[in-house]
Image 1 (cartoon, rainbow, N blue to C red):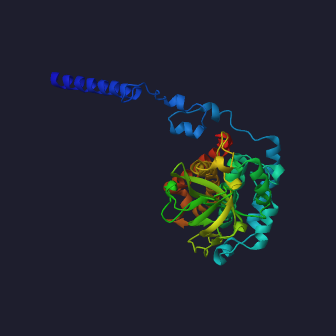
Image 2: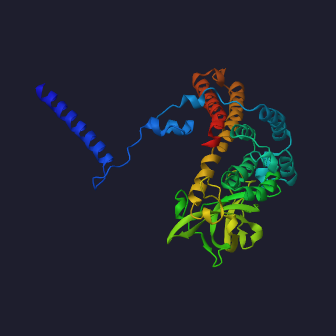
Image 3: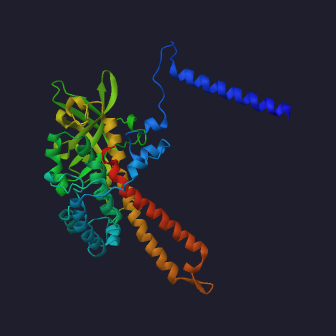
Length: 385
């Protein structure tokens, strides 16, 4: 027993010494100079979004309660928008035909544009509806056809989102009005054959001209949603900054010339949406089409060179919630079909809905769907984080 106690005490001393050593090492550098103190999780979570706080182990309840509430104007806009969207997807389109033919009919796209679905978050003064993240998520829940959902969300969740988040006033005024009406479609061009998750290893390159008026863009991208249709793309390429390669974000128009698209990929699902390779052959991109840079991340021009990775992460972090919202909406429809089957199908003289395991499965579906819908409404909190 004495040996066990001594062993525990020795272990306690070793841990205490290790903790002290870690604290000492973190407060001094190799040269003995003081270093910045490590923040506690509570301090680090100050000023960040509710979700980011959870990853730091802190529940910022003040961000979740009182529950986010839409403005009166946005509530009225959603009331007048959501019901027509639901009715359109129930009555105005044939999802099976779209998947079979791999084509979204022009009249279907025209109806979607007329409802304003291509400019949901673009400000009203630039032809959009000016919805918040919460309002956008609510509409995405009702995009019940996957091909249409991918087309619309690739256009604005990521395609034009860089201009919306990191574009300066001139860039927004030039591009967003036609993107809001759907006259032009947008795409997000980051992924390459050798660069998926490792976005900083892209090979596409942009070289500044001698007169510093434009960049020459060369390279290729794969798996680009809307890549064959988009007139405007947010493109990421390596640029030389102080002798080192750094990613820069560009607004690239198909009208610049030198931009071509490969044949559409034949996918397992979402077959009506367009996914393809995109190639850039000596595309001349004006310097003013660089995104990001500056104190507010919206300077553009030469100030934005080398800031493309931050722009890309900003777009992806802000755009992902739309996928969750659309998935939550699809789950509601899955529950309806599952419940219908469970009540109609009989085995061992009873409906499937009477068996405990089936009740549990549908219960879990309902619980997860409710959690997703609640989280979608919390997206209002993320608008500025």
